Length: 271
Ligand SMILES: Nc1nc2c(ncn2[C@@H]2O[C@H](COP(=O)(O)OP(=O)(O)OP(=O)(O)O)[C@@H](O)[C@H]2O)c(=O)[nH]1
Ligand SMILES: [Mg+2]
Image 1: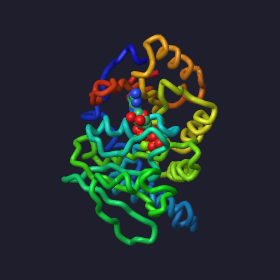
Image 2: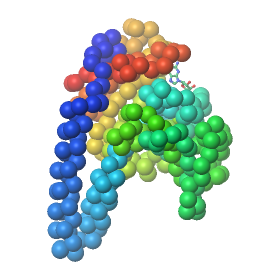
Image 3: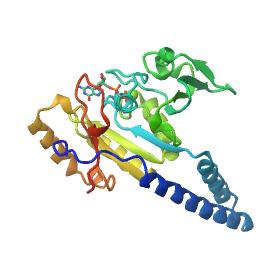
Image 4: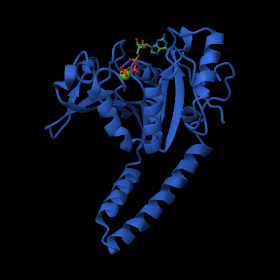
């Protein structure tokens, strides 16, 4: 709950070792299953296992931030990364899947339909490619943007991914995010204290739950409501069965206005 911050997320040590062990185990199972499919000439399933093995070999974990438009997904990512690079704005803003992953120096690459190679741009130009304002209706036909950052949190193969908000008047944004869901390993579903959740949000969350292995629910913009209002919103949100079942743990975000997000503002509370 927002008023009972517990332990900060521990991203090191035991959890990572366990993750590595599980990855090896899943890889071995997938390898066996793939050989079995090859013997029984089940080509579609064999391809699916090939895809899974390639992803394991890539050592990549896709953690995507998803949810209704303008609730603060891009702002949340900037705060976690200690960076101001992802464009944010009041109107439906992000329009292109934007991946942030490890690189020894800051670089920004954009991929457009029909190009065989990505193009490098400056970070200040990113909004011209990935936002509705800078690239209306995606007239530049950008398929993906990639930011490389020398951030410690990304070192172990984490791909932290910003997605276009769903449910706005810009239907293409909803479609872009919907079609990206199968690529996501875990999702952070962001809503905000000033909106809580609508029926449409719940429906989208249900869809995310059905496609993505682990989903965490975050309420953003705590600064916009009083303490008593925040408690009411949390109670209301928790009463929604789809939200309650979002995952075994429910993180809440404290994001004080005009202040950077500190690691200990992200709290995990097992349920
Ligand atoms: N007061 C307050 N405003 C916030 C907070 N987080 C984000 N905002 C503002 O909310 C607006 C939307 O933020 P974005 O981060 O662009 O939201 P988004 O979810 O990425 O939006 P889309 O890309 O359109 O889906 C911006 O004006 C932000 O400055 C917060 O914690 N408190
Ligand atoms: Mg955004």
